[in-house]
Every structure is written in structure tokens, then in C-alpha cells.
Image (tube, rainbow, N blue to C red; front, side, top):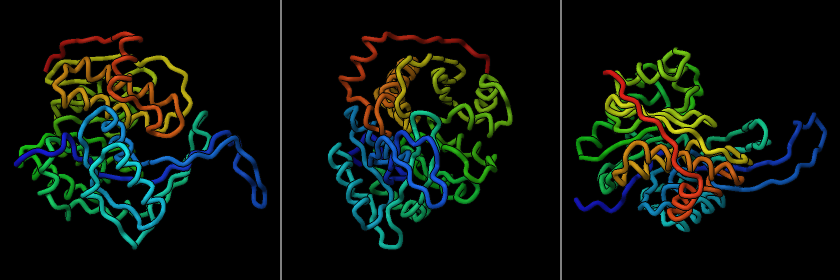
Length: 319
């Protein structure tokens, strides 16, 4: 089969309403005024897709939007960045999801309506159009509730010769289902942040988390926020510190990092350069409001790294 896309992304897309300068929640009957409200595309899968497409990769999105103005806005933004929407469904059952991000410049709080995203059933996906991609990025894992379906999807896609990456994100149920280790065995690049890694493993140190998870996956990446990121691939530990920048809005920083890292991975870069690209995309992301407003194009990424320099550390780790 001729490969049409560098990556197919499966997961959530919604609207982010970013409220800046909200220092208190209004009491009943009270009105408060804020500095700004801004409308952006949101959802981890959508933000990742836009960031990866900005870097010049051919991206297709597989998800569900509502038949409404917000859904049309998301579609228009996808088209603007060259993202293929032929696998993007529209529903009249729910409206497009919305997240209100309050005071992102200090300590973010969120109010979310899942909307059309809750209709995404990975057990019913048509694999043929997905298989036109070289790689699939999954952000649709919901723990025990759809573990079997996501695992079956991953195995089916691997059988078709695709490479896979996955960022499971935060577990809203609080269970931190241990079945995640079965999924790690099927995924070529498994990404999470340090808090998620500690919850899943029950360990308190990132290095211990890496060693534990490496029993199940051969290529693990843990995002460390303003401390950078670390990867363990085939027994080799690689660390790259974060670029120091002024943060305006950290929404979507992890998704921007994922895009930078996988841009490197899909272009055959060494793990060092994947981490550097991820950290650079994350740093540029936090400089603007919205999850993808500050993410760079390919030239912008190269210019930023050239200006800031490369920092990394490689260490051999015993199996």
C-alpha cells in the first residue's frame, strides 16, 4: 500500500477557551472582569497534530467533532495547517467538546465538557485508511474502560507494518490501570510525564520509573517539565535539559514536546536530537497563549536550536 501520511493521529479535538488574568472564581451572583479570553483549538491529539504539521509532516486526524460552529472552526484550523480530515467524523449526538482554561499564566484550572470526543470508539475504526500512514500516534487510551480495544488496535496496526507512539495522559479515574504495561509492549515510542510515570509505577524517582517501565517497552520517554526530558531506548539513557524561557501559558506544552520528539524519530534522528527538538518545541509553545500558537515551523525550530545550542547527556544503562 502506498503511504499517504507520515502520521495518523487518533484521539480528541475540542475548543479551548483560555481565560487570562482570572485571579478568583466569582461567588454566586458576582461578576468579575478578566484581562482576556481567547478561543483556540484544544485536545491533546489535535494540538499534537497541528504542531507536527507545522514541522512539515503530512498528518491525518481521526476523531469526532460536533455538527456546530466550534466543530467547523476546528476543521478549518486543520485544513489551514494541511491536516487531512477525511477520517474526521461529524456527529449530531453531542456538541464539540470545550475546555475552559482559567488563569494559565499562574496555576491552571480547567472546566471541561467532553462532548463529541466521548463517542470515539477505537474498536469500530476502519483500519484501511489508517494504514495509509507510516506511523500512528494514539492519545485515546482511557484505562480499563477501553484497554482491550486500544490494545487490539495497536496489535492490528503493528501487523500492518505501522510504527506506533502513545501518550496516555492523565488518568481521570485515579486507578492507573496496570494493564498499561501490555500496551507498552506493542508501542514503539511510549511517552508520559513524570507524575504519570510515578502514579503508574508507584515509584518516587524518575530513574526508578525508567528502569521499571523498561521491562515492558524498549523506547520510553518521560517529560520532566521545566527540567527537560529523559529517554531510555534499548538500554541507553539520554537526558536533555529544558530551554529556559518565559512561560505565558503551559497548555499543550507536553503535546508540543511530543510533536518535536516524534518529528525527530520519524526523520531517523538520534535520541539526543529527538529530545532536543521536543524540548525546543515545548519551550516555544509556552511563550504564547493556546496550545499550538507558539509552536514552530521547521525553520523556526532549527533557528531556535541554533541560537540556544544543544545540551544533552548519554549514559549506558545495564539491561
